[in-house]
Length: 305
Image (cartoon, rainbow, N blue to C red; front, side, top):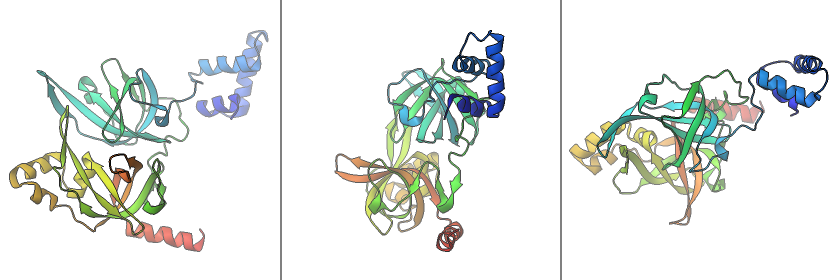
């Protein structure tokens, strides 16, 4: 895409209209600047940043002062934390762009920000940490977040919308047998067995849910890990409900709530487990199987729609 087309798209203007602004700017400056120079001045006056946009695929742990645009996919309720005599609140979001997903954590005063699923957010001054399942962007006191900013980000609004097969834009439908480490896939599979372990892991903010087992889609059986809300969905419980049953009735009673053999639509990233030297799925999204949608999709494929 050329410079004029890029500015026109970001400004929501027609290309011819942009050329008129550029020529007007050159005339204003007695033609002492080139068309490219005038275009950059026009972009600046329109509030458009022409530097390459940072995407999730570009970020790495330990990055600071991160500026990034994201779409909010899931909003969790704030929870309290206490450490070394200090108390506060934290609220986690699951956000995405065209290249993947990331957790965004809002701390203390920022937990009061009114935010909902499908909002576009502009983060300024975030820091990146390695989470248990996704990278985490933390917003401390010096960070800023703008809700639905005026900048138009092409392609971001469509992230996370359902498409044929009940999958998501950041994932592709693929059998487990064909999936390779690094692939982001959606698959219809059943939880075939569970690994016996306590379904919690400890974080600075308290206990979080984790379920590990094997999933089978008929082509392959691989290890899968479900964190937080995704683990709770298997049990049809939130975290506090799971903790209550675990402490009152024990591990077996809690794990009996998980129905083996039930099929789900699972979306997540395939990675290589270095300890077991096998492929595994880190589940990022879990949905009930929509049979009507699946039948419609298969008919469309057969009929060539």
